[in-house]
Length: 185
Ligand code: VGL
Ligand code: ZN
Image (cartoon, rainbow, N blue to C red):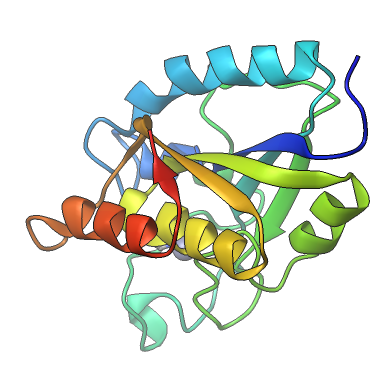
């Protein structure tokens, strides 16, 4: 029996087609996170613990994209194939979807511009486990925001992959997560 006190939640960050091989902002080996994350999704749901899947959910025109002055190629545009979750990622009605990146801000974190922190608190969650794509952007910022919001954090290093615009970005991201008090496991 799980009680409401001190619950755990799983946050699966942006496991979407555009971040997987073949996508417009493909993360090398991004699809390899699906297997380990699916195992965790099953375990959390079986125990009745909350599971969240965030998605990058951009309008067609946003300052997040190079064409409008931002950093990135067009990716994860609302209601396109690229924005869909990887086809093998578990879909379950109990999984709550968090959409982010709806405006002109970069919104890398699943907490940025969303009600995720309030929802987790309402559910009695004190610890979050975080994996997904990409280690050096959305996963890192989600982990850092979770710490700022006061949650214990386990960063699941086998269940994340990095963009690595600069070599070593993945290692630097993990170091930042550790420095913020996340447990990298
Ligand atoms: C992401 C770059 C741009 C991510 C999102 O999900 O890590 N990276 N938008
Ligand atoms: Zn994006």
